[in-house]
Amino acid sequence: MELEEMQAAWSQMSQELEKQKQLTDEIILKMTQQKYTSQWNKIMTGEKIGSVICYGALIAILFNFEKLDTLALQLSGALCVVILGILPIISLQTLRAMKRVNVTTMNYKETMETYAKGKKNFVNFQKLNIALSFVFMLLTVPVSAKLLNDENLFETLDPKLGIAAPFMLAFFGLLIWIVTRWYKSVIRNSDAILQEVEE
Image 1 (cartoon, one colour):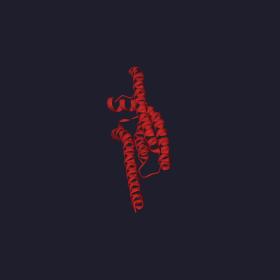
Image 2 (tube, rainbow, N blue to C red):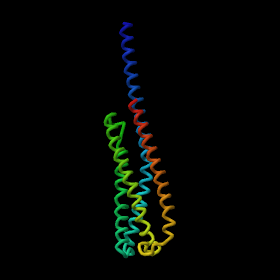
Image 3 (cartoon, one colour):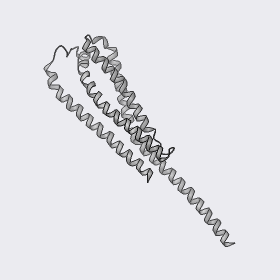
């Protein structure tokens, strides 16, 4: 009788320990998911603010498009509108793909496959974004000069532009460097967070 009681008690303890282990695993996965999501929410917030600014600039160019009175200015303005319209959409889509990673509902293999695919798209988009941002910066100068000062830089090559250009390039380079470091930091942190799941 005592042996049967001991076996029953042992069996009950094993079941309770298994339940506790499952509960602990669930809590760990939820905390991991929360840390992962938090990393990408930081970028998402910044990108949403950037998107609002982009669409504000796009609307401003469209409402003042008639002021762009030469073919060169119209072409520059149209390219600015295209870049301002497309980049925020692609950016938010790549970030949503990163946020689709869910360690609480996916197994480890699915998690890592989804993450690897999203990460590749995100990194490739950032490379494209840097190139297009540089082109956009160059296009913005004559468009802004015309819309804000009614000055056509294609006709009046102002020497001030030659002085301002290196400062603009330096500012652009610094901005890209800061953003790229921040994004790389988020990717490294995400890699480390997901690595914990495997362990």
